[in-house]
Image 1 (tube, rainbow, N blue to C red):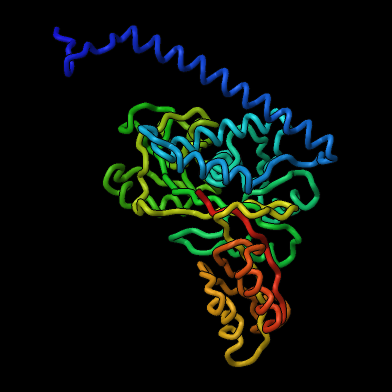
Image 2 (cartoon, helix red, strand yellow; image 1 turned 90 degrees about the horizontal axis):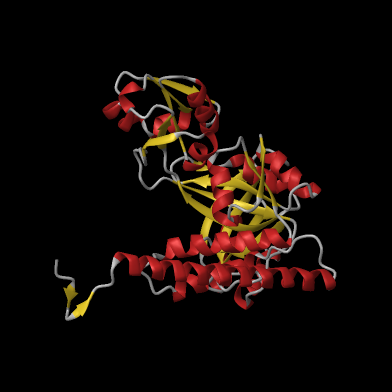
Length: 366
């Protein structure tokens, strides 16, 4: 066999493996050097009197954007960012592990969003309701919480918006998660499946795939996709539709991936915490606005954003619960509240409305 390629001999498989082993040794040494630096950061913060939480969302966002911007390939940016997020997560756990509340049970897409944002070295705590996540963070039982706020096909999550009306918590970040539904089972043969468990919403989002590939198979709606995965473990000849995290947690094999009928189905999650987040260089600001009741009140409220050329990415109305037909507006704008133009726009807004509550400035999702 001729190993010549362009006049030079290709390295043998043994030589390539030796190179990989040597590179792995270097990577391991560098990662541990980084971990030691993280420990020194923690020691410095403690000596400065900081003991509660060492996680800084704006710093992590800056690092990950820099990694994506300097990545030469062939590793894609998404993979590079995911790798470095896990390295940072493990290093932060050496300083002080984060406790993160999420909408349970274990194996939900909200837990998947928590891992995507914080990495897998955090301590995740499932809670049964969105308002309980807010209470866990407010009380200090958890340092952060992850709550869904909107879905591209189902719309806004009203319980989350309503919780912000009552809570002093601030938004510390956002996660945009592409929702992929997977068919998973203990049985390796899809032909052996006689029953499929999933949340009613997931069954509806996979209806066309199920009609084509599992016609006549019983579909059983349950309280959550995580519960579906648990039932699939206990029930012979059954499968569940759920996310990857559920397959990992319950030891199920994924038989078919991405079976959702709408491939662009995404959910946006918010990270909630007790402290304000500094500028990262690419930020959003969310606010709650209550207008006075007169014709053109909303137009007047939004005018400062146009005047200072602030891009508004979302507006959603909710009943204020203070009176009949009294509404508040949840608004997302581009920029950080410390940016000069946005600060001026917010100052002008405060003079023209009944109430402005800034829910937080935070890094844009990567």
